[in-house]
Length: 490
Figure 1 (cartoon, rainbow, N blue to C red):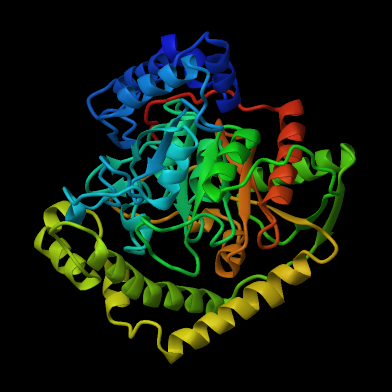
Figure 2 (tube, rainbow, N blue to C red):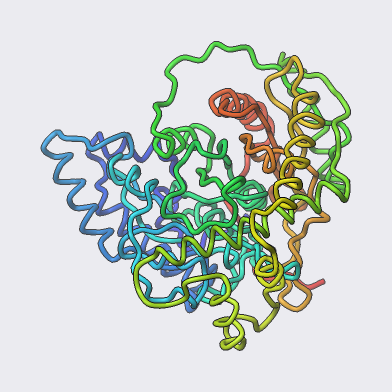
């Protein structure tokens, strides 16, 4: 049995958002005590010179304790600001918030003033304490095919709290690692294709990429208008629902009676034997619990699909990032071309391990021209008409394994670990449909997740399906706390 590196904080560190809100309401906990405890835990576990050096946090909000005190004072007067009143939440470093870097892990944006993104305004209006910003794969991992997930020039390499030399996934690496390590109950990530689902799976969390457009992206550093979506990450599905409701401006349904039928994509495999076997056992357990589960072959992407997706992302990256940089206050880079020039001038800091080939390829495109529009049309037709619509015929949710256990991070050879994943994220990403993950157990002491896909704007069906799967998993093999194992040889 492993001993937590900050054992005195375990009770609060791994309490659910619901449990913490109950304690705050009962008066057995204050927001100030909660924030102080999490900050002290982070000093031991997360800081580069701490005991663990997880590096999941890019920066803490300097006003977090002040806001916590205000939350306690208003609660004492019987006033609640919203459903997350007094609860700390972390946001990914590509999301702007006043007083935080909002620099996407890049030194090119160091010192640039940040404003509250629309989703941050929603968090604050719901009473949440924005505790800090999380480290990430720089520029959300659309920078180089040789990049190492979880590394940024401003924050270093994020570790995996289950085993420190393993990948925390990307690009929402720090959001996943921080919540899994007990540094906050909730975090916000962003996903273009896999960037919430991957780190959630590798860190043993529940994660949701909502339908594109369900959560506002104003104030979020963009890659792709057609595929980007911020979304919640948490240690259980109900907490995921709480955070999604706030981010999307909705309320958690109090009653849900809709029948949910599952389809299993039998040909979507990770290629990792133990992970795929665990998924098969989960399917067996779902059937035994009375769930309606059918099995079917689902379309897989070919080279044309993958090439079209990359072409779309590169064209949108050029236009969308340049537009964002031009409108952000402060001195500094104002276009993708200027980012490339900056990174070349500061290659020792920005490119010590890998380059920015995707940036160069994006800059060479003509943006949203006719070739882009044709690629996007082909991509959408494949994702919706060829793949997802037939896969979801007569069912509500599509299931597949997600990622194999976290691979070892390697700054020398890089790599996203894509060979260790099923094809599940790309169809949903291209279509802009919602996709989620929940843990399905441990393989070799490391967590792995199951992936769920639903139709556009059907997040509540997806999340309730995830709760059913979570209940089946918890009945047989609930996840323990992370082990914080030191790097292993071999």
